[in-house]
Length: 147
Image 1 (spheres, rainbow, N blue to C red):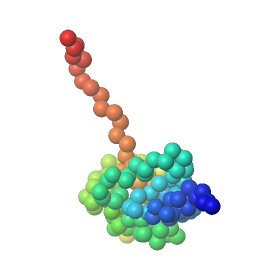
Image 2 (image 1 turned 90 degrees about the vertical axis):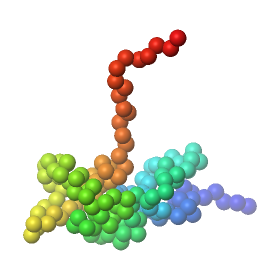
Image 3 (image 1 turned 120 degrees about the horizontal axis):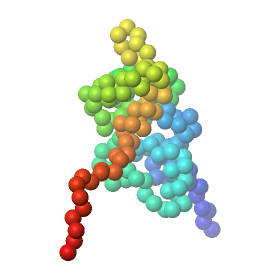
Image 4 (image 1 turned 180 degrees about the vertical axis):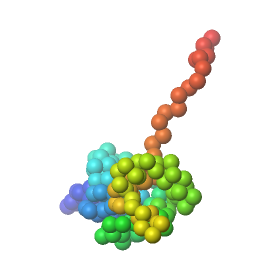
């Protein structure tokens, strides 16, 4: 007699760990990726592979994410460790690009000339920099007429 696994048990079998109060929210950390609880449930119902399965590189350092769950403030070098696929200069360029957003939403404070970021800043960085979904490219010019 076989027992049907719940989607949480199924995800843990695939190498993901469920973290109810993770930095990025409720979801699964593992294999270098984060998948939200609702996305994992949809994937288990439709029997599809995680969207990151074909990628060679990992996007986040899942062990460090789990280790830092209780930390409320992060330095730049912590952010570089959290997001394994991103280089330090990319993060600094991102900070400069979205400086007004970070300032207006109070996502960081300056202490001794160093930026100290909050958990909300980590979520913002993940959504905008790591999990970016490119908008469709607009085609320029007139459409060619097929003969």
